[in-house]
Image (cartoon, rainbow, N blue to C red; front, side):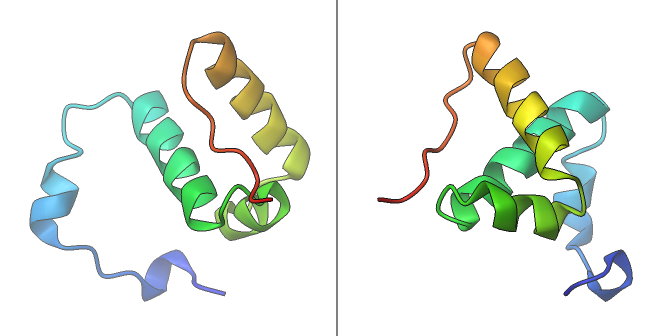
Length: 74
């Protein structure tokens, strides 16, 4: 599993995050991870190092705000 110390983000990509609210960055990271795992919430939660309950709560919150949540692959 990757740790934050294994990541070497492109400085230009990191600069694009400047000025964004932390909640917006978190939402996009969660949704991108969920897309990468083809909607597998258990795997996404493990990658993000959060509990499945926390992930489900956040996804419920996003859905209430009208965000399109990736569905699990069939």
